[in-house]
Image (tube, rainbow, N blue to C red; front, top):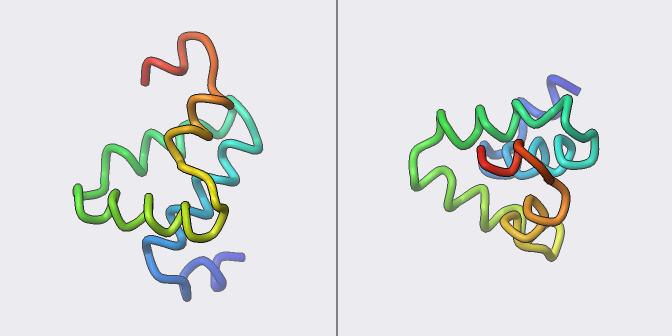
Length: 74
């Protein structure tokens, strides 16, 4: 898995990691926070576009529908 992730474009990698974190639930939300805090605005926009291209959903809508309670404020 590590080699596959390493070989992807960084935007695609971030999009796939975000989707996986949303599926796994609250124990994996740290991945979303790490992506949001460590990427530049250009990288975040690229990951957002890649997410939409790969999954035909908006990352913002998926986050809003999967995350509830106090975690949503992050």
